[in-house]
Image (cartoon, rainbow, N blue to C red; front, side, top):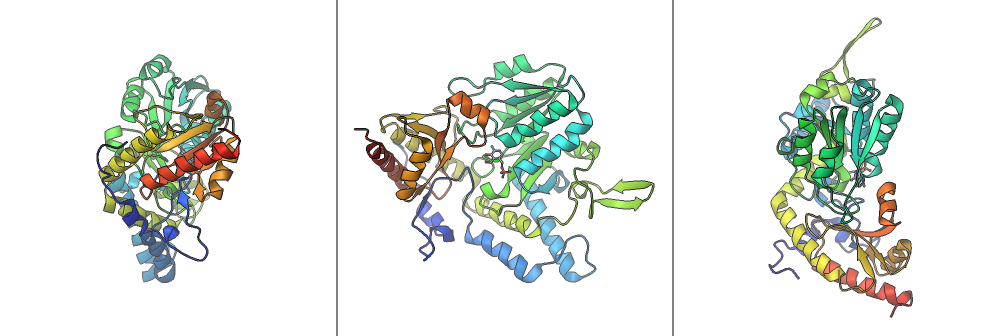
Length: 412
Ligand code: PLP
């Protein structure tokens, strides 16, 4: 059990979320599927709605005041992201649709330009498909070699194994900051340091970390970092690619079209400077403004406080889940976040999720878009994942519901 009292009051935090308020359309749900997407606070919903209601115009185009204001709000969102992740300048922040698009952008733009036959790309065994398939496809297209950094039986990544994989042909190491299945927090700063020492670049998939632990791109010294707004209390349809300025200068555009050129003549195109060079077409303006509000929300609680609270809750959950007979929890005991993949006896994970749903507890079941990892673990798992509005009572309810599930399936 947690020895210290919990440092945050999640009941108070839930008051900031319509999802947790009584409403004719709502069940009183314990929401434990935060690794898939988080709920949105009023502040985010209102920021988006206010923009659509009163400031809607296209950005970087209009010869009118409302367009100038929309552009200001959109660029303020970019500056907010830059401050949040400690980028050197806001031009290092590209808005995308999400983590998936951010990583595809790097694979297409940087990868298709700089990866040569015989080059090597290292991915880990615990990657989500978003940080796996772009590299598998790139390797196939460019005649490069994909090398897999395997996890230990405990689900961790050993730096010694990476050292053995790195060589003068390595061009990139692509790694998740937090595994969406095992919850393991990977030593990204150390990984980037080793990649750089071998002359390679380092890409960090921060989809599961940015809302839960402090993320500082300069401290990590990653070359690329990707995350999604919707897993960080913000809207869907907005994500971020951070890249070092020098790389963005060298990379060709990912998509081409309006808003990303300086001049177009029949014989010559001059691309705009980053970030515009990578944002062809009308961008997700309201969504970026919603992301701004989401990051303000996170900072209003405090990232250290969030990390400490979620760590306390994770410790509590690790203790309590042990009480359920026949429950097998994957991932390490330490250096982990509040994502718990498990099996229960030989009950199919989908059946576990269905029984829990009947008790108003939402979890996910399946392969979690990480088929190679799922295979390594022996098949599908159930997954409960925490956010700042969860508390010990939710864990207690989960444990009770898992005891109940065993009984439903005839286990004594
Ligand atoms: N990377 C990780 C570790 C994830 O957990 C996810 C989503 O679950 C993604 C990438 C993809 O995020 P999105 O679907 O928002 O692009």
